Length: 110
Image (cartoon, rainbow, N blue to C red; front, side, top):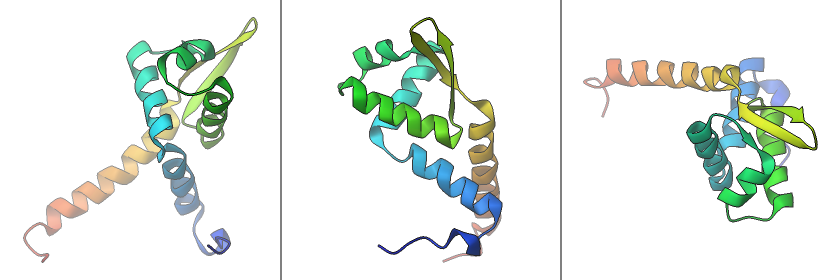
């Protein structure tokens, strides 16, 4: 694959691509589902829940955090993670636009 020429796209397009890329991994979806279930979580609890090594979980958490989908606060020697509403609202807004368009085109498209 070639280098993405992100400068050809709007800031919003690049941001949405980063958010969706970060979420597009089964381990990251599992982490998000776990955080939905418990509302906040310490990294070691995520490692107990998802069958991956701690360094792998940490890398996935880093990707989710860098994309703005989760937040983390330091509590002693641990980091407590929770979902970042702003990141998910951006995805939600985009999907609502797509959904609305599909609804209006339902009878006009092949």
